[in-house]
Length: 212
Image (cartoon, rainbow, N blue to C red; front, side, top):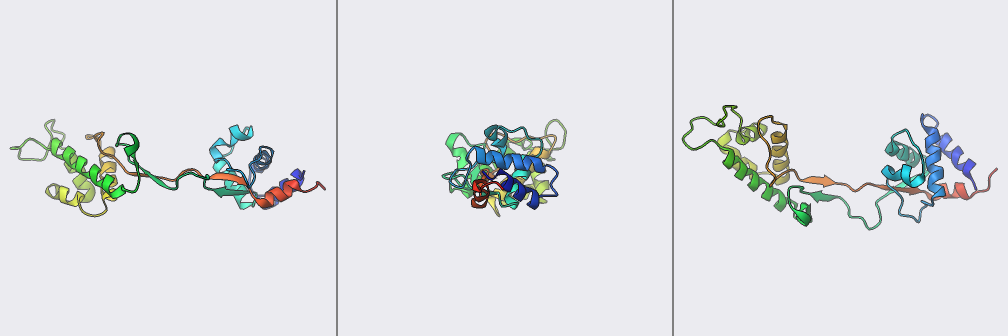
């Protein structure tokens, strides 16, 4: 088998990389454990366990170096969904937002507005401060984030992109010291499933070649 040819390819293409020995070990491991072009590949985070290696460098960077050297290719896991959306504050399967992202965000905004109303000072108070005298309310925090007067907050939240409005409001609340979000709203998160890596056709040719 052409381990020497494969190693020479890596050392030629990535001669400036400090952990080049680990790149060679990873590539050989991918061949030994048959992660070739016909396989589903593996995510870089599983490399040490799957390939039985003890690595010191960041595996993602190492795998990307091998992609640059035309030894590995990066693919979506076959059968895996593409980018998906999660609203962790929704229960069960509803947390995975499937095709209804604006609707989920609008639901979060309405729940946030309800929280704002519940947190507002009791009617009859002259100033928008909470009872403990801290001067901070959910309304004041979110209004400051959007640079609007407190009385215009509901209108502002219901205008524009609901995902951006919700995520910006939640971020402001989470950064504030004196207020907290409730569990019936939160950020809408967009998640890209991890890429998988496998040997390229070129790498297989090198490994299958006779040694010099």
